[in-house]
Each structure stands twice: as C-alpha cells, then as structure tokens.
Length: 591
Image 1 (cartoon, rainbow, N blue to C red):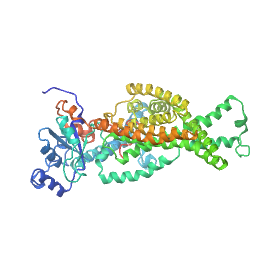
Image 2 (cartoon, helix red, strand yellow):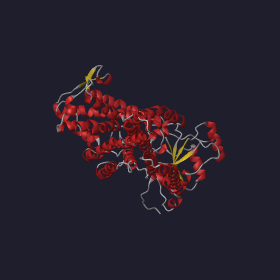
Image 3 (cartoon, rainbow, N blue to C red):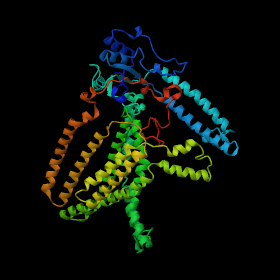
Image 4 (cartoon, rainbow, N blue to C red):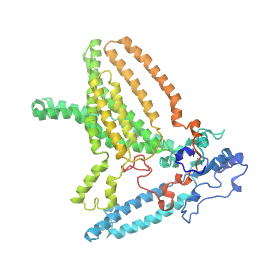
C-alpha cells in the first residue's frame, strides 16, 4: 500500500548455488524455458574501462539464466537477481591500503609532534633496502594502491560471475517456496536453492569456491582437525603430576626437600597450585591461544557454510568434540586407565579390580572440578573486567607510548581500535559452555561438588554475558536463532554420556541389573526423543513456515544490499573487520 515497513531482507531472498556456466548446458536450459539460445541475447555487464558509480549494472543482467528461470516460475513476484562476483583481489588491496594509510597517519602525527621527518627502508619488513623519507614513501604507496584497487574493482565487475546468485522477491511466500523447492528434474547438483543469509551474514569465501574446491579443502583440513582432537590436553595435568612426584622422590635427581617436607602455608599453597590449578590453567591457555584460532581457521578453510552464523556453528561443534575427547575423556583416562592397568596386573581378585575402577573414576573428578573452579572463580570475574583483549592492548599501547614507542597510540585511529566494540565469539563461548555442561551432567550422580561448581560457573557467566551483550559487544550478524539445533543435538549426547557413565558406576558397585537396564533402554529412549523433537521443531526452526510468510507484507528490497562494499563506488562502507564471524580480533577473512 505504499507504506514504509521494516523487514528482514534475507526473508525475501533466495541463494542459488551450483549454477552451470557451461555454454552447452546453458543453451539446453534456456531452450527448455524460453526456446531461445544465447546467440539471440545481448550480453549485459560493466565496461572494463570505467567505474560503475551506482552499481546498477551489478544486478539483473539480461542474459542470466537464473533470472530467466525465476521469471518463468515466479512471474509476478520475482524482482531481481544479483550474481556473485569474486572480489577477493579487491579485498587484498584494500587491506594493504588500510595498513599503508595507518602508517602514513602515524608518520604525519610524529612529524606534527616534533617536526622531524623519519626514514624507512623499502625492503622486506622494513629491515632491508634503501632509506627514504617515510611520509613521501607511504604517500606513494597509498597512491599506487588506490590505482590497483580501482583496476581490481573494474576487473571483478567485468569477469564472469561465480556459480552463485541471490534472487530477490517482493513477498516471503514465494521466497520460502523457492528456497525449499527443486527447480529441475535433472541433476540434483545444479541450481541448488537455499534460504539466503542476510546481507551482513554472508560468508563470501564459500560462494567463490566450487564444490570440488570445497571437497578438497575439507579433505586437507582433516589431518589438522585430527591432530588437535587427539593431542592430549590432559598431558599438562599428567606432566605436572609427574613433576610433583619427581620433586618428592628422594632417589630422584630433582628431589626438592623444602617443597616436599615444608609445613609453611606458602609451601602448601605452592603444592596446591602445581597439582591443582596450574594444570587447569595450562589447559585453558592452550584452549584460548591455540585451539580457538585453529578451529576458526579450519571453519573458514572448509567453506562448509554460506553464512557467518554457519561458521560459528561449525566452531561450536569442533569445540564441543574437542572438549569431549580431550578434557572429559582425557581426564577419565588420565585418572583411571593407568591406575586400572596397574591394579589389574597386581591384583588377583576381580572384586578388587572393580573397586579400583570405582576409585579411579571418582578420582577423575578432581581435575575436572579444579578446571571448573578455575573458570568459575577466576575466568568469569576476569571476563567482567577484561571482556576482550582490546582492553589489555589499550593499556600496553599507552605504556609503550610513554616509554619507548612514541608512535603507539598517537593517532585517533589507533586509540579507537583499542576501544572499538568487538563481536561476541559465539562459536567459542557456546563450545566452552557446552563442555562445562557436559562436566556437570556427567558427574551429577557421582560428584555433587563438581555439579555445584559448574552451577556457580553458569550463574556467573550468565550475569557477565548478559551485561556484555547489552553494553560491551557489538552486533555482528543476525542468524535467526540457527544455533539452537546444534546445541540441542549436543545436549542429547550429554544425556547419553550421563546414562553410560552412571551405568559404569553401577557396575563397579555390583548393581548389575540396574546397569543393564540403563545401558539397554536409555539410548533407545533418547534416540526416539531426538527423532520426535527433530521432526516437530527443526524444520520449523530452519525454514520459513508458509503460514507465517503469507501474513508478512510485500516489500521492495533494494538489490544493492547484496552487493559487497568492495564493489561499490570508492568501496563505500568498507571496513577491515567486516565480513568476519569474529570482528575486532584481527582474525583473517580469507584463507
């Protein structure tokens, strides 16, 4: 009715992938729809010799097979098609331009402060080459990159489109139908339709790659995933435990009498740190410094999702399975398997072996309790004060600017980057909380103190996260709650783990009947529960119900929303941290 309404652009759009670009296949498809071939159509595109200031030629090309198909099927509601162009080269030059501009700003600020013009070397990393005036050098670099950016932008616009396009409708009903339908009764690997992610939720790298490229990338990432999953994080706990024994063994070369025989409070505190919190702290550092970044890069390289939310969901899954294998199973094996092996060799009675199993499984709760205590009493309060590394970077930068590095924090851009809002790392935080939930659920029947500590962690983490999501972190993308099905699947795995863990405990206490009942019935019940919930809620969660779609208003969605900033005139709206699942942390965008 001509009224201005606020709508979600992704609900009026469809993503089409695996579009054939072979001339023969295109002609066959075109004849089946229009009876014409490509020779009767004029090519529409941008000129390689001129910039396109308004992006009008970036969508609705006249010879695009996608537009022809949807015009035929949805003649009344189809509005626009936006082919996806590979602009990765433009992004590369823009990032180089941003770094050169920042260096130029620093040199100009230093010159304004003390009137001295500094010099730089033009060689590798500024360590080799000829010495030249810094300001003149960076001005020249910026001008050269400006020319390269314009050339790369024209090249990206003029080159053939990738195998993906965004199709825009004027109502949600036809968009939902198109996203859930099969267009051709031919090859199911062609013209695959998906619900389009929002303009701020697009993982462009996945759209640039073909199915073959994605398959090769996933295969190449499997060894790295296996190494991270198998590498025993519990090795830190075992190493410190062995170190503690070495310090207190009189025949050892590193025997430390004061450490083993002291009765002072400081000595006792040191023992508890070495055998209690220090292993958990090392695991946490390994998790945050290595595992987090490796999983982020793996999720990018694999190209498993068209959305940034899908990248976070992949990271969540990897985090959960890493925590399950390394922290949970690793702690149980570390505390129980070696003791069990020694007991089985030394003891002749089966009753004594089973008793030792029970003692070993109960002892495995010590490391996990210390791990949960570290997160509940140290990391959660610390997160309230240091919500992201930018706070620490701001302090260090100010200290450096007052001491040795006068160029640190001298420009407005540097000061803003330290305090600029960061995005919430949903993949990491969701994975961490599920690992904590796994610890609490698994030990609910055998170690109540562990459950109490985990409960304290969740209470504190809820308060801190709610505060930070409201006042600290910035919105990065909207996924529409698509993380919940991933969380639900892992919750069911936690319940199955609880059932088996409890059954094994019952076996050690000779409650054979109860253990067999749990082992036989619980997996079946949970499998049926998972199937029912999946049928009832998963499709409704991931797809737009038509009953809801037809109630929504018609809307004219500007196709420019699906044109990236890199391809706009002068790259309007571009930012070095845009297009990332985790923005503000210096993570790479392309891999």
